[in-house]
Image 1 (cartoon, rainbow, N blue to C red):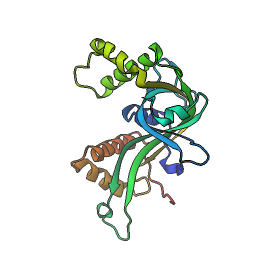
Image 2 (image 1 turned 120 degrees about the vertical axis):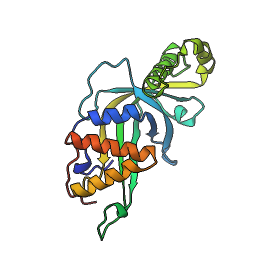
Image 3 (image 1 turned 135 degrees about the horizontal axis):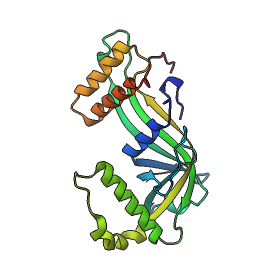
Length: 231
């Protein structure tokens, strides 16, 4: 992913937060020489068995996820396959009407993290207890971050999990590096950035309001700084 310097986050904590709060990812790997790459949308979380500290570019970290074993992508993947996992965070269209200047051009403010790593099938032949643990860990993470006020108790559904487990392919990705792009109107003067953020915050759209909230937090921490950008 091409990331102009002003849009590059200053530390990896912004990337790990984006991954945690936007865990429905896109996993991509090369296909056959005469075919397109494989791409699958799927849930991905930090591997709870990995107790290390995140590095600046996330290298050395681990992620886990699962996909349908009938997916041709699963069949094509092998332990050791290089993969790319993309996570998309808050994003919103910026209309030139917000700038109140001429000439101007529309753009799209967005946030994204691209994770590079090495794929490992947790149980290649048939799913068992380890694959079940991946599913349980995923449920725990999502109930914690996105569930209802009272988290769902999965204990009475474990037997049901076992009935669908044969269709589940669990995997681990060992991260070799990552880059994050946080394009949030840094190329504009402070006054215009303020107008963009205020416009987003007033929209009847969760996506716009989340983008405004992220802009606000990053500005308060000094992460967003005005700087001309050549596209």
